[in-house]
Image 1 (tube, rainbow, N blue to C red):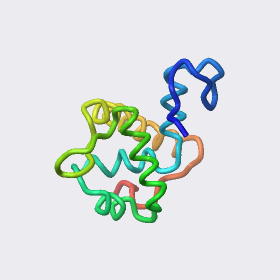
Image 2 (tube, rainbow, N blue to C red; image 1 turned 135 degrees about the horizontal axis):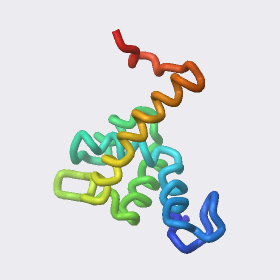
Image 3 (cartoon, one colour; image 1 turned 180 degrees about the vertical axis):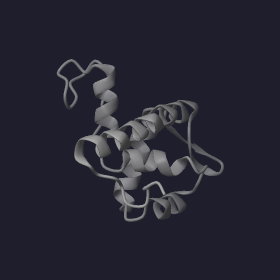
Amino acid sequence: MSIPSPGKKVRGSLSGTPINALFDLLGRRWALGVLWNLEQGPCTFRALQERCGDISPSILNSRIKDLREADLVAKTLDGYALTRRGKELRDIIVPLGAWSAAWSKEVFDYIKPGTESS
């Protein structure tokens, strides 16, 4: 299975707009988890699997392949690492996390356990 590409039909878009292609890629199981766990720095396949918790080796292998093809992750001498583009994307996603936390509290009265203010 190839990664979602701009200009081709993707989930949510018949025309494959770039944002829909990106959301389709990031919506794949464990794609965001892999990006999140690589923020801690480069690591081997086994170490990344441990960081991700219950991810299966086949899913991790698929996500690494997808994210490498999208130029978000690269294989380095130290293992897998975020590329410059992967770091830029993560920097964009972090504020979305803050926005989603406020939205969650205001609209659904939900606060993620362990994140309550004292």
